Amino acid sequence: MSQTHEGASDLRLVPALVAVVVGLVVWLLPQPAEVSDQGWLMLAMFIGTIAAIIGKAMPIGALSIVAIAMVAASGVTSDQPGTAIRDALGSFTSPLIWLIAVAIMISRSLIKTGLGSRIGYYFISVFGKRTLGIGYALALSELTIAPVTPSNTARGGGIMHPIMQSIAHSFGSTPENGNTGKIGKYLALVNYHSNPITSAMFVTATAPNPLTVKLIAEATGAAITLSWTTWALAMLLPGLAAIALMPLVLYLLYPPEIKKTEDAASFARQQLSDLGRMQRDEKITLGVFVMLLLLWAGVPAWLLGDAFALHSATAALIGLAVLLLTGVLTWKDVLNEKSAWDTLVWFGALVMMASQLNQLGVVAWFSSTIEGLITQTGVGWLGASSLLILVFLYSHYFFASTTAHITAMMGAFLAVGLAMGAPAMPFVLSMAAASSIMMTLTHYATGTSPVIFGSGYVPLGEWWRAGFIMSVVNLLVWVVVGGLWWKLLGYW
Image 1: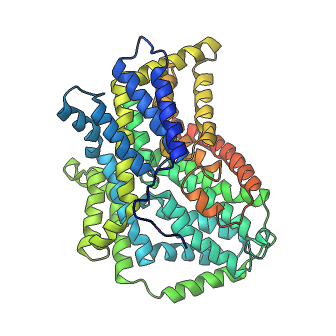
Image 2: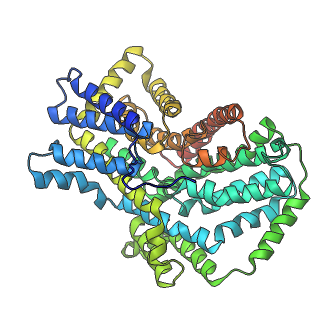
Image 3: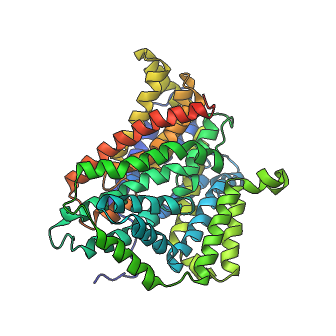
């Protein structure tokens, strides 16, 4: 059993030194005439920070504190110390950042009250007579809780994965028994591949989505600012189509040995019986979630007028306040929700650095450089936007963090596509979808990956094969179904 020694550090020296060297090399490279000294230094610090995140030199929250300190101390944004620190901390006033942090706190009630498990076992009790039905039950369960669970890791790994494992165990299909092909491998793959699809469907379904919203607003000069409702409506039909296809595609790719599973439905009903009647805290949690969905969808404002409109972050704070006032969550629960506070810190730091790169003209220079290279190929806006989406999606093989990937590449790629003449809404929505679809690719693509892969149900080669195939399927769904849906909605 390992022990934590006094004075021990989170710092991993070799990745940290590599990140420092990467940052210094960028800084010492010939500086383009279009970029100021401040912009070039900010780019060097930014790339060094991304390299440290990729190399896991420290936990991302700790690295974010280091980045904030560097930006403030270097005076890269201002010669005035007071202004410099305000710039470095400026993103912490962003409502989008607080929306995600507060929503993660709220989602703790799903686990604490058992409501998340109840929802999962309910779907399995209804659809669980066949293995394919269990696959759809897992996907629908994930979809049900996705709008109010911004931690896709907590949703796929913390809530759904134990349910999936309990079903596989009930059939004796475990890695220890060497018979995951019986049913466990298929269920584990469905468990995982539900996660990227549902993450693409709601702003509040994964933490980096609000960052995407911000980058889209910056790239379009605030001409496109995606609200919770606009995002959900735009992603609704392609998301449902992807959810409908995914369990079937995986069933054909990795057919389970067990096809009929009458026992699974009985097992789920027994689990529901053990949970008993829905308790007070579960009912309050369910009520809060319904309230949040109505507020985020703008229903009160639609029915009663603009005076009843609320920002999505305000609605989240109201939901958390209700859970605290009723005792469903305690302040200790909120303090112990470390992922929320961690997200608040790293999200704030990365948004700040990305915003400063934009303000200092670095993103404009980088995007114009890429635009020039693509223009030379003569592919036109359709070829250019297709190339940008494909490069953005499949470069995730080189990233272990969706947030780092989005921060590093999204802003510039959006600017290039729009400058090349791509229809604005379809292009930015496709890029937004790609930022979640890319989670399918590897066993390190997002926080959910190592949880499910680490349980041992799916060999590495099969994980990567399934990931690539599902990335193609999902991308085609969003391009074809999404494109037609967005045409119907009048987005192009």
